[in-house]
Image (tube, rainbow, N blue to C red; front, side):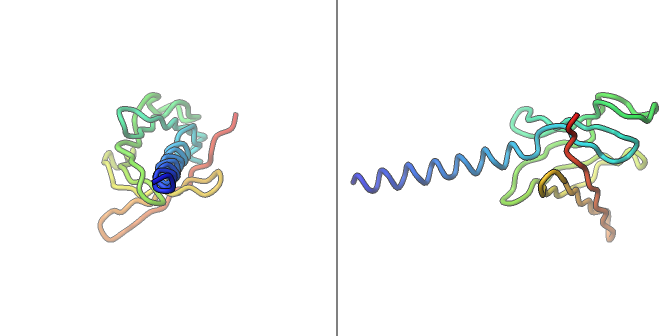
Amino acid sequence: MKNFKSMILVTVLSLFSITVFSQTGISGKWNTGDQNTIVEIKLEDGVYNGKIISSDNTEVEHGKIILKEVTPKKNSWSGKIYAIRRGEWFDTEISISGNKMKLEMSVGFFSKTLEWTKHNP
């Protein structure tokens, strides 16, 4: 009985640590590489959303949400990204490696991969 309780405790703690790790990796400020545009990603109501907080492009709307409904998956995240030039939302798969975030969008038969870098002011 004692071993069973220990095993359950270890399992619960392992799942909790994996969840915490996966949820903290995407939060923060990211440089899109396009005219020094910075997007801040935060957890809001159980999902992650990203909005533009600064840009060297004077036409960019600060506060505009361009990443929404992002939820963790096993080794990645999925959500929607706004293509400003097309004025449309597209499904995206997100993965992180070190300080790089890759966002893969699918548009019909085509796909595009963006790479954002963790912003460290």
